[in-house]
Length: 282
Image 1 (cartoon, rainbow, N blue to C red):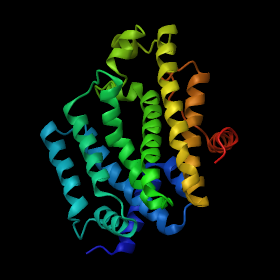
Image 2: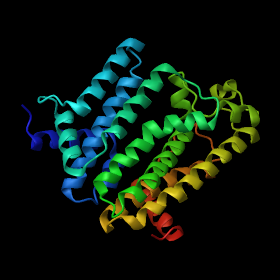
Image 3: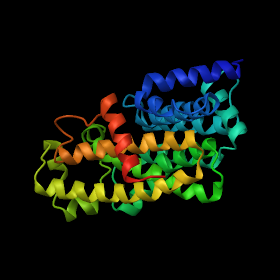
Image 4: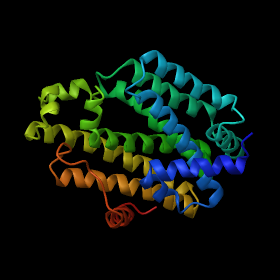
């Protein structure tokens, strides 16, 4: 049987190994909250890996995702991620339905690879990212949870939109296109353009449209900040600042995400967080 202490230690190790930027962002939280958010990340990483495994059949991926869903409600005593997640759920009243939504998003990745409209894509983003925002907000402990929930979900949507923009080449290699099909058509961008890495005026206009949506959702989601304590507010501002920094970098490069994957150095992350703070005081 895995102890809670051992389980959290493993969740923290997974987070530090797999998501250095995420681990960098949560370092400002108190240890107990940092461990709980690490448990959420480790579980989300498991869901993502199950959905994306290129060597597994669709049936195998579905079975792994169903196993992920099962441990939300009945954790295995010898599974460190499940043990840590169960303790975090109990300690911070993390809504289980948000975690089930996360798994539902993984199943959507198994079943489909294109989205006709933003409304369709928004449903997917709500599952894979909005749900994580809601779960993390429970750990942060906002003074008005009901008011905080839609802002936390919208912030998750904003970060996922920026992820989609950054990861166009990587997703295409997995056979997926998350940019809405009607918007590709409206701006005159075909999948052959994505495959060729073309960054002409049509592509830049399409991506600026995506960026505008991301920024509007980011502004809305940051209304969460005044509802949080100082350290949780700093954590959320850090995530938002880093992602806004990635968006700024993409814009400065003319949205060329093909020749070089957008990324920020430690110094650039710090500057991006400071810049967001200057633009949007809590």
